[in-house]
Length: 266
Image 1 (cartoon, rainbow, N blue to C red):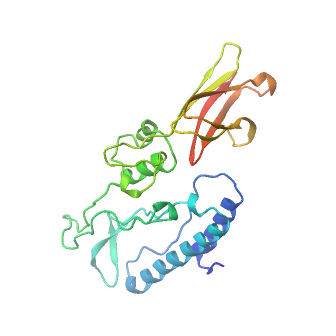
Image 2 (image 1 turned 60 degrees about the horizontal axis):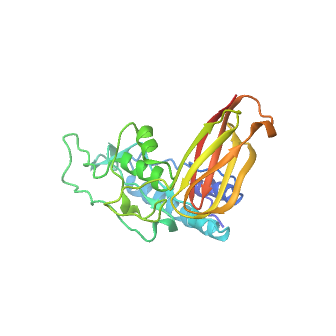
Image 3 (image 1 turned 30 degrees about the horizontal axis):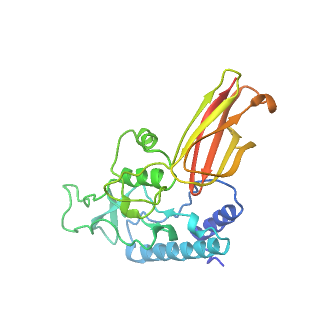
């Protein structure tokens, strides 16, 4: 049962889609009202209670469907708040906390330093402890299983990863070992017009290799088997299917690791 606040109504829909195996990797829901320039001591506790109840209901729902361990939730905002009060509220600020929810965190609690309310910059903003791009880089690599080089390209620079979050694609996470993708992959066209998808598994497991249109429609499955650690390949022969010339997507799934790439059918 959901309590019926705005956030819980949205999460109820997301839970239904996840349990229905829709396959979407990212969902975004919103909760308005945090622009608390006034009545902050009344409005903010209510908003936090709405988050707490909605998240609790969401994971109870996912647990019933056996999906709770596969879902990580994160809060973010385009602004934080300053410390100084102005008539019952606070102005926009540059620093803000980020909260994570889900069994995948394996019991991790508060990470980072508590802010010093007296140590602010010249404009009255709290000083930032963790670059938000480090958080994004860690999630892209260690939860969504995107290779490190691609993550750096997406963020247009290299940012420190945060291994203390407690999850990654390899099941090994130390400060001294950078997070890496568990499936290396590449598609190459052959002389006869077929395509070979090369991939390398960091560990053995059940593997699926599927082909999709650019709009996400599944065309065919190339591999559905338990495979050993190491290099493998899957052959896609368009002559057997008759696809028109276009860009297509291959997706490789092994355990919690899912990677994809593009290739052109000519």
